[in-house]
Length: 358
Image 1 (cartoon, rainbow, N blue to C red):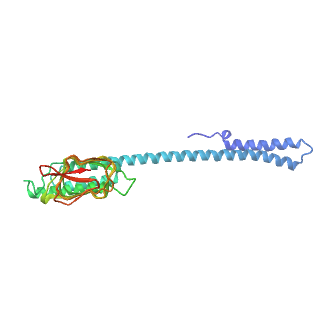
Image 2: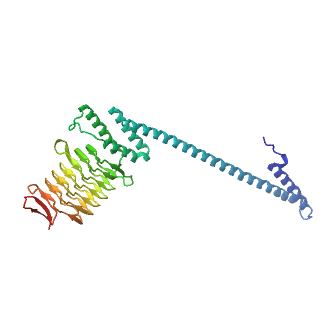
Image 3: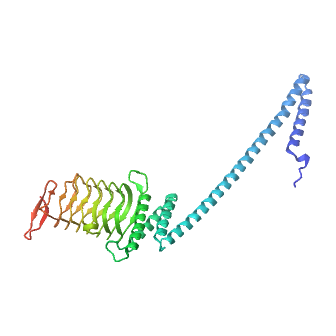
C-alpha cells in the first residue's frame, strides 16, 4: 500500500500556502500606516481564500476527469459484453441453421417440415440469413419430384412430399417483403426446373426471379407483385387438363426485363393492368386458352415473334409498346379477338391467321 507523506499532500500544501499568504499579506499591509489592521487582515484572508478556491477548482476538475474515465471504461465494458452477446447469438444461429439444413435430408416428412419452419424462423429473426434461407427453400423445390397424380411413386410418399413442398412455398411467401413497402428489400428467387403446384406469390416484392423450365400444376398467381430485377420465365411447361391451371399476373409491375419466350400457358392467362417497364418478350410462347392483356402498359419493346394465341385474346393495351415485333404471330380467328388500333389479321394460304400491323 502506497504511503502518503503528509508534507506532500495537496490538501496540506494548500492549507500551508493559504496560511502563509494570510500571514504574509497581512504583515506586509500592516507596514503601511494608511492601512488599518482590519483591512490588512481582510485582504490577507482574501489572498488565502483564493488559494483554497483554486484548490477546490482543481479538485473538481480531477473528479470530473476520473468520472469521465470511469464512464469510458464502463462504455467499453458494455461494448465488450454486447459483442460477446452478438457472438453467442451468431454461434447459436449458426448451429440452428446447420442443424435445420441437415434435417432437410431426413426421411420423415414431419421432420423436414419442422426444419423448413426452423429456417424460416431464423430468417425472420436474423435479416442476414434471409436471402440464404430463401436460396435453400428454392433449392428444396428444385429437387426432382413426381407429382402424386402423375408419378409411379407410392401415393402416400408422394402426397407427404407434396405437403412438405407446400410448406416450403408458404415459408418463401412469408419471407418476402410486401409490395406496398417501398423501402423494403427485394430478395431473389431461383426456381429453375422446379415442379410447383398452386404457386401463389401475390402482393409481394421480388428482386430477380428465375423460373426457367419450370413445371406448373394447378393455378399460378403473381397478382399485384413487384419485380425489381429481371424475370426469366422461359421454356416453362404447363400441363393442360386437370393439373394445368390459370396464370394470374394482373396488376404486376416489371421494372426490368420480362422474358416469357417458349412458355406454354395451358389455361387462361391474365396480364390485365400489368406494367412492363423493360424489354418484354413472348417469343415462341403458346397460349392454349384465353389471353388477356387489357390495359397493359409497355414502356419498352414487345416481342411476339412466332407467338400462338389459340383462344380468345384481348390486346387492347393501355400504352402500346414503342417497339413491336409481330413476325408470324398466329391467332384463331374463330375466337374473340380484341386488337389495338392499327392492328389487323391476315389469313395465309395454309389457313392460319396471323396478326399484322397496318
